Structure formats: structure tokens, C-alpha cells
Image (cartoon, rainbow, N blue to C red; front, top):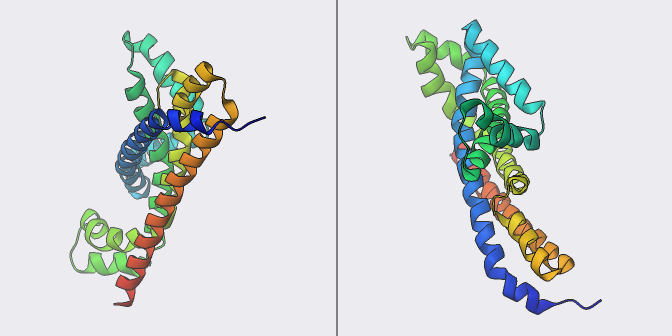
Length: 221
């Protein structure tokens, strides 16, 4: 079996375009997941029982079901309820954001709980409310603890976006499938797709390492 480098070269523009879409979905999903996760973690740690109950249910449901099923529910089942078809891009970002939010919530919760309780007591003794203590005292200290797992979530989501290809959305994996359907060059295309994913995740991991070093320098200073 010969390895067709020309096929790879000719397919590279389409695959790189798909990689750009993958990065776009990942950035949007993790960004929205960051906001959802922060709000959910605060609800879980608050003393309001109904908010805590809703947050716990959300995290358990999302973490207890596959992302693939969540995509199917949003793209296929939800339109039957609202009576309107959902754009594949909206469905992909929505599902990935909700999925990421549940995991980011646990990252935030662990980071917040890693901060010494004395810091909360110190904030309250200064006359700060619970919300002010969380905003000005706890969260700034928790950030450095959540950076490594947050980068891991970014890496995981970059790979998991390949699942949205099942609804026909043309990110990197779907572009690869379409090229293979026309050229039958499965080996060459899947190797190239894997290499592109590897490059993207390695770049994200490297960025995370740089951020960790900067936080470490800040702590020493």
C-alpha cells in the first residue's frame, strides 16, 4: 500500500478550515462553560437550598450522561418540543457548553474549597458580605488552583467536539469524513486529522504550562 502525500496536501486546506471551526466551537463552549460553571459552583456552595438542589441536579445529569446523547437531545428532541429546527452550530455549541459547564463547576468548587476557611472568616470580619468575600477574597486565590484542570478541560473539549460530526456539522472530523467519501483515502486522511488534533492539544497544553509558571512566579513575588 502506497502513502499518497498528494492527497494529504490537496486536502490540507479543507482540513485546516475544519480545524478552525473546531477551535471556534471549543473557545465558545469553554467560555460559556466557564460562566455556567462559576455560577453553578457558587450556587452549590451557597446556603440557598433551592439553588443548591438545581445546581446538584444539573451537574449530576450532565456528568452522568454521554455528550453524544446530550447533542441528540438538543438537536433532535428539543425541536419537537419548541416546534422549530435548531441550527447545527447552535446545537453543537449549546451541548458542548452545557457539558463543559458541569465539569468546570466541579473544578471551581474544588478550587474554592481549597482556599483556607480562615480567608472567609477574615473577609467577613472586615464587614464583607458572603458575595463580596467570594468575589474579592476567595475567587482570586482559587484561580491559580483551577488553571491546570481548566486547561485539561480545554484539551478534552477540543477532542470531544469531534462528536458534533454526527449531526452533520463540518468541523475537523466531519471534513475528514467527507474527503474520505470522495477519495477513499482513509489511512492518509485519518492520520492527518489525528496529527492536527495532536498539534492543537499540544499547543493548548503548552499555553497552560506558561500560565502555570506565571502564577508560580506571582506567588513567589
